[in-house]
Image (cartoon, rainbow, N blue to C red; front, side, top):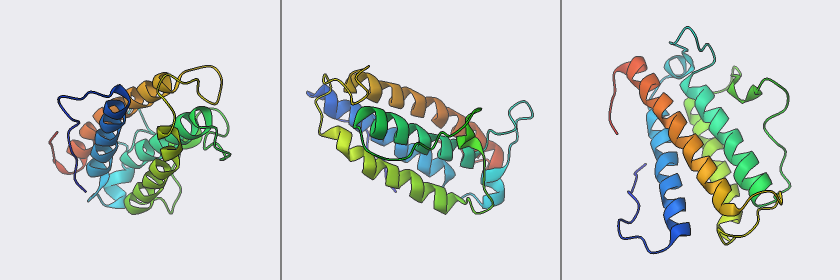
Length: 161
């Protein structure tokens, strides 16, 4: 998988926002791709026992499902957040890097429905603009890509942007 930096002389705010989100998504995938299940399921930070590379991907999938697809585009999809505390960090025995990368990428396809809306439009939830939701998901993704940077380095020493 390759990443492309967003257009430096961007003229369209909506396109630029989606390009940055896509860059962050691909970075998240690259941080998990190549890890074994054992490495990706490891929780190396004692104070954060659910912070695993697989957990981050599951959480980002739930973030995209809720914010971009349900709240933003109004798609009739089940939320992946059922219960409290947030269950999206919980791993199942059959969660692997490949399966969770695939699920995350499937959510990108679902989110394409939001791209059709003007950034200034009110989102389906009636409480925010599409612009707000997109900015929120980008900041959430960026924050968790930072976690993935650390988790990948602790797992196998790989660093990079």
